Length: 365
Image 1 (tube, rainbow, N blue to C red):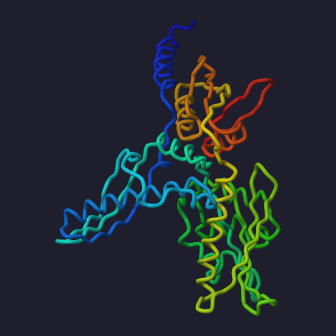
Image 2: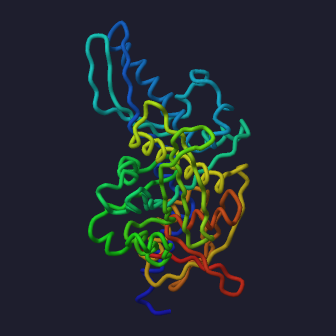
Image 3: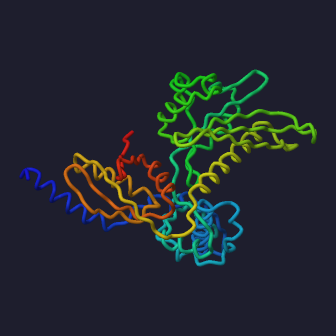
């Protein structure tokens, strides 16, 4: 062995022993931020105590709803029937305001992953943990003036303006619509579903899937009411385009812009439900899959390990061999192999099969 490699191997060995005994990090999956509380009581101290209890309860309910399907929400225990503090690992308070009888603040609450999982498993409620890469929305409005995409008059695009950011397990991304976007994708390319150009735009925003969302106002001839018709087409590198439609009746007191905002909210909920449904965990039984990770430096391995720590369905990383050019690991995970593959891709980890070996690569962006 070349002596100059000895210190590197010793360092890798020490790090591998340390890291192989740790479970993957769960970052913000079990953390709920920005929970507003506002309580009035007999005095400020009592108001603060009640507010902190209410905030943790509200955060817990928000967490559970982000992990489970809407159809199962009614199966959750009623608010106030649980000691939520037993699930809380930590919380912080900001923007505190108080009077002699009133207390206002915002809470960030971190929950213990294992008790939350056991709680849902005990109720036999399937749940999802995998965080999706950002989903890029391309909003196109069809009106009497034709199709609009990057134009300032595109009300459908304006309706999406406040939807960006993470909603549960899915982050919604909206192009800023500046000249760079317009040069990458014009309206004709979007209408013709130019997958290459859609992919280029998604890459600019570090997004995974892209949804071209068409909206138009029409009339419901049977009811004699106006309606909003939304057609969404999901483009992914891992499946054929998936079209879905939503129709909303315009309420008597509702403006067109309000209806569009309601339509965008409805689409977001559908995106979340579809994602959770594809990644539901029915139980916590572990599978094991072996991977070979090519490396040329210690940093290569540490980069991959950092990404693996973001994959929530990976419960444990077991290192079985390492050398100067590869690390072999056993990933202990929950769910099925397809769900594992999906989860890995969300952190820019891709899997290739060479002979009988599964090769794990980190695709840096």
